[in-house]
Image (cartoon, rainbow, N blue to C red):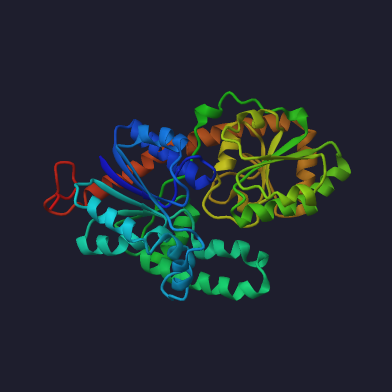
Length: 411
């Protein structure tokens, strides 16, 4: 198929779950022989490493700059009631709109838009031409806005509530328009279906199971591992909860326990605030396998979440036993006690950690079950097949005058 795929960020390096998802779906579909044009609006320039990673996967890579966050345009447009802030930041982009309109003159089998917040530059052209297309929503922004609400200064909270209201209006309008809508989990599909009033496809988040199959964790290391993108409030809150309430209880029973914290945008102030040698400030690592080998289990005390958690899937595929919360496990059809151990209570989480570190046989059971779950339900080959099924339905919606590949003939 000829696929026009749009993204509001470069999917390399894979510093977040969304970028990891995009990169591996692109990689897998390219391996299946699809011809992909990737249209990206990025806040950072295309680096040599990103070019080397992405160009082999696509027929064309088109990267346009996104205006700076502090641009006067963002400030002047902020009162527009129809557009929430993230839509303004990623939209109102004439160069992107013109490039997209030019690309629509070519024959496409599939037009794939990622994220409702990136949709504004494409909306008018898609409506005018009446082309079938799909939109993927990784999570509802109106819901995720609650994750950072209590962290904001008091004077900002009314503005955040107003923006969440605008986002719900935006989602209700935009998610009704595509020919096909995709979510990353059954739970998110249900929420999006309630807003859009239509069936929603599920294309799961995944993991490259072969990449992690040779990792052997170290149960006696007493090291917990957390991985996340710290640009997201949910990950910030998870670490603060862990270090303020959960780990102190663990250390009362087992002072040898360590916590390694890895991920993009790790706040520098944390090292000063929590000055404890048992906390390892790792930062971003493009390859997690060595860190996983030196760890005993993966700990994700998430209290706000959406979508499904790529880093948890990577831990499962690497054989790391997982201790998390109901929010951490949301979006993944895992069974508590079989594939992971979980609780939403800080004291119970501390107890689970303490007990599991003293039960290597139990860690082994969770390791085997986690690997099996990841490979059977969430290998990227599974996600790619689900996405190709959506693509096939789109080709059947092609209007009269479609080209040989099912796309619309150029004018």
